Length: 221
Image (cartoon, rainbow, N blue to C red; front, side, top):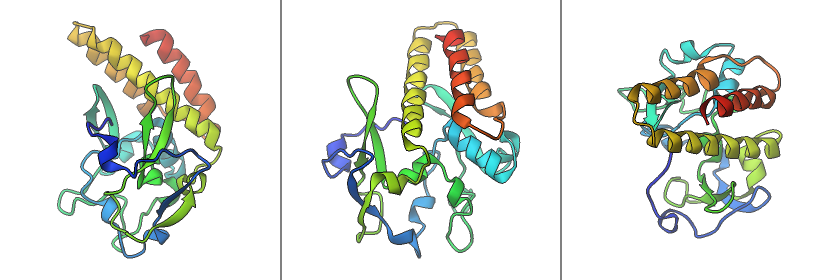
């Protein structure tokens, strides 16, 4: 989800790489779950997030749609996001004790927080940055970015993030020039179905993703 803000207003003014130290460690967040509530539809899920949930919880997309995730328009595409409970505005996966019930399966945005990503203006890539106003814990300690995001095979993961981001950008850019509303809707649903609704098998996610990405690029771009 793109944010129409100046990074100077929301960060410490630094950019970080995967092996840099950053003041993001919240000490296990015990006693605080502020970032798990009131997030609206901002916790947008990528295909890896869905794969983790479906395989880790032994469920499927349709079951998750029954109370845990929802669909919204994001930068011209229909994408799933974590659902907040109507009365409490808390994440549907937050326990009564204020702890994440799917912590090992949590989405990439949750793994990042309070970090964010900023994509490069030239070339295809991104840097990490620290969001200075988002986390209520003022006594954060330094931790290596690699450790903080807690993601296996991090180089493949970062490449996946880049490829997924720019694929969506390329598709939405093409759709902006399409005057056929029916065709636009068809493409949007193709992306949703291919990368989210159609289940992934247990095993190497990235191999499955790139097979689908190749199919989508040929069909849509």
